[in-house]
Image: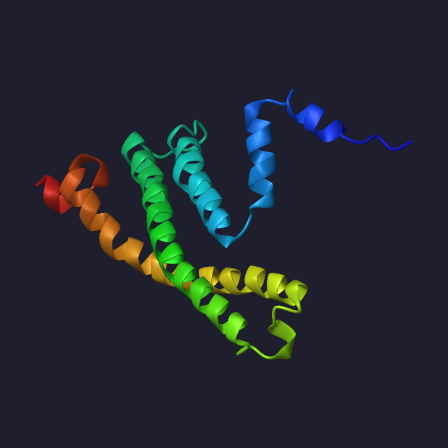
Length: 158
């Protein structure tokens, strides 16, 4: 037995959050992955770090580590999006001009779809060391300047 037209009727009774994630799933790409990862890294992880009752670290150390996660998420979004988006646009131009060879032309949409999914992932992985380097250079200085009590820098406290 085939039931037609059932999905729209079910969707109207679903909570808005479920409908949102259903639409979000269809739009998934590297940009959405970057944002979703940043939310997990920058919002969810700091909560668990800061309020972990099993950790023996003091409150300042927990707060410093939690804020570090948020800083890393911000830097990762800026760096990854800043590199991935221009490369994505450049790949579009190359595909339209046929510069990637016969396997990656508009007549081979499956190959293009796979290529578009793998390339930004590789670029994102390439940016991780750069993001970490930026974080390690800027975060301690930022914390020392704006949150000296949390940064635990003994030279500043003297």
